[in-house]
Each structure stands twice: as structure tokens, then as C-alpha cells.
Image (cartoon, rainbow, N blue to C red):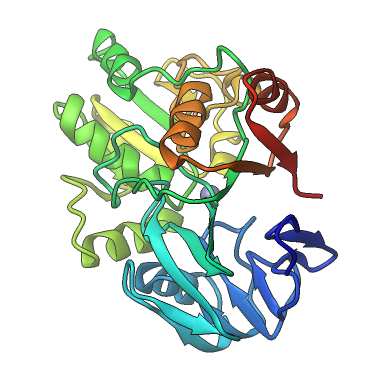
Length: 314
Ligand SMILES: [Zn+2]
């Protein structure tokens, strides 16, 4: 590897470490994969050997049969070697088990963040700052002024409607567990029920030691006859609920277009917003920033105008 060579390249199989057979979050089955977290846009089945955190392995086994031939699960910060390169996992604060992948090569430390956030989330381990030379950051919400409000601000609005029910859409894995905990923290007077597709992930979170508070599998009779219930559903299920005087609907997402068409406004995201991106780039003390996942144009312009070296990984 040359000193000025990009630490990661995008190939038809996904992100690849040059001069090795190692892929990170590959899009096609490969011999050697490092997987940052269990979301479907980062983890697919069919690899020979997978390196991921123990919690991610548990979630992936629940999602896929025959996820990989061999799964290696190093502890947080435990050094593991592949093809002579030293790797370790640092928490990304995105969801249960989500990791930044850190590696050292020729005395150069590189961090691939995967998805991450800095906002408090007690349903998983918090983001861990890693000082490095190369910082490869996701850019999902890399637009100036894109700021996620505190989740409590959104959820306390539900108190204005004490005599109705709610149907709230959330991704089954990660967002649904964080929301269940937030409901219990900020609006505990409501009864939380979850869709059958979400239940298995709630159980894995609780087995991993993250108490989500009070919740129960969905009970149709209770939802029909009583008020003060929140029914947490996957996004496709929410779309089946037409407007009704029996409930209010909302979709939790950082994307405004996904929230539109429902009665409640719930801009709750598990990705870093503009300020979190800038803060994390500063905290990394990296000499070079690389961007992946998302529209990076405005972030590149901003960093370049502040004399920070930045490049897209393409
Ligand atoms: Zn994710």
C-alpha cells in the first residue's frame, strides 16, 4: 500500500481493502467479510468467514439461516489479525452491536464508521471516539442545517392526545427497540405494544442486557377497546393503516419525505446529523477524511473551504 493510496476502495462486491482479500460490509458473498452492523444495507448472507461483534452475530443469526460458514466475534477493542493487518471494533452508537472498523497498516490508523450517531441512545453502547489518520465517515444527513431534535421533544407531543391510540412506524431492528425505551422514559403513561415481526429483536436486545422497559406483543382486543396504546409497527405495516378517528399515525425517520402523510411529526434518526458529523470529524483528529454512503457534496465543500483534506470513496 502506497502512503497516499486510499485505505478503502469501492468494487462491484462492495468496500475492499486494497492489496488484501478483505471486504467491509460487502454487497455480494465473499471469502472474508467484516460487517459493521446487522442492518440489511450492510449485511447480506452467504460469506465464508465473517468478522463482527458478538451482538451483531446474534442479530444476523436471527435474520438469516446459514448466514456464514464461519463467524468470528472479537470483543470491543480486542485486536484481531487478518492477512497481517491488525483490526479492532469500536462502538458506533447506531444500534445494538454496531461497530466502527479500525485497522492499522504501515503505522497509519484508519477508521470506517459504518452508520453512527452521537445522540444519547441507551438501547446500545455509545459512540466511541477513535483518534486516527484516515476517517471514513457515512454522510446520510450531510446537509448544513440538518439537525435532529432531541427525541423527547417529539414524543412529549403525544401527551396532547390522551384519549386516543397511536400507530407508529419504525424499522424493526434498531429504531423499534430505541423507541420502546424512549416511550418508557418520556411517556410512560402509554401502553406499548409491538408488532410480531419486531418481538424477536426486542428479546435479543434484552438478552444482551439492554432493558427496554414495559412492552408487550400486540393485542388486537386491547387496541380496539381501550385508549392510551402505542402500537409499534414496521414501515410497510404502517402504510396499511388508513386515517381513522380511532388512532393517530406517525413514521419515525430523519427523512422528511418519509414522515409526510401522517398526523404526527417524528423526526427521530439513528444517523449523525450535520453537527454530529462535523464534531466527530474534529474529534477524530484525522489528517484525511473519506466519505461513503450518501450525498457528500456539501460536506466536501465545507471541509475543503476549511482546509481539511476530503475525498469520496468511489
Ligand atoms: Zn444502519
